[in-house]
Image (cartoon, rainbow, N blue to C red; front, side, top):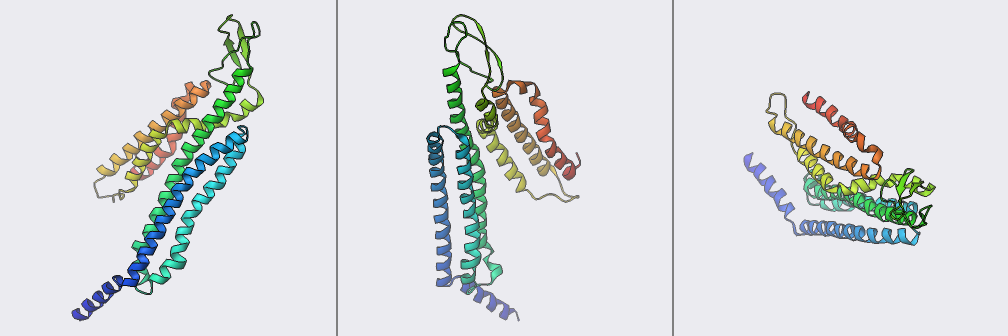
Length: 284
C-alpha cells in the first residue's frame, strides 16, 4: 500500500517537471512580465499626456480629470485581463499535466500582480491629481494676480493666500487696503485643495499603507493566544493614520485658513472608524 502511494506521488512530481508543462509556466511568466511592462509604460505615458491635455485645454481641469478616469479604467482592466487569461487559456492547458488544485501557485502569481497594480494605481492617482491640481491652481492664482490692482495707485497686488474668500489685502506701494473678491472660477475650484493636501502628505500616506500591510500580514490571535504582536501592530496603524490626517488637514488649512481651528476635530472624525474597528477586535 505504502509503495503504491509513493509511486503515485512520484508520478505527479514527474508531471510537474514535464517539459511541456514547464514551457507553459515560462509562457505564463513571460505574459505577466509583458503586462508589467505595459502597466509601467502606461503610467509614464498617462502623466505626460494628461499634463499636456491640461495645457492644451487652457487649464480647464474637468476634461483632464475625465480623461484620467478613462485611463484609470484601462489600467484597472489589466488586472481583469490577467485573471481571464489564466482562467480561459493558461489553466486549461496546464490541467493537461496536473490537477486544477495544484495550479494555486501559478494562479497566485497573477493575483498578486493584479493586487500590486491596484495599489500602484491608488498611489499614482494621488501624485498625478496633485500635480495636475498644482499646475491648475498656480495658473488660476497667476491670472488673479495679473488682474488685481490697487484702487488707489493701480499697482499690481499679489494674492498669496486664501484665494477662495473675500478678504483685505494691503498695497505694498501706497498701503491702501483693498478688498479681494474671488471670481466664480476660483470659487468653483476649491475642491482641488483636497488633491493638493493629499499630494503633500504622500510620505505619511506611504507610511500608513505600510503599517496597514504589516497589520494585515498578522493572523488575528485566538482568545487564549498572546495578543502583544497584534496590539503593537494596531498601535502602529493608529500612529501612522493619525499622522497622515494631521499632515493632510494641516496642509489643507494653508489653502483654507478657516479650517486651522478645526484640525484636531477633523482628525478625530477621520479616526472614528479606526477606533470602532479596534473596539470590535480588541474591546478597547
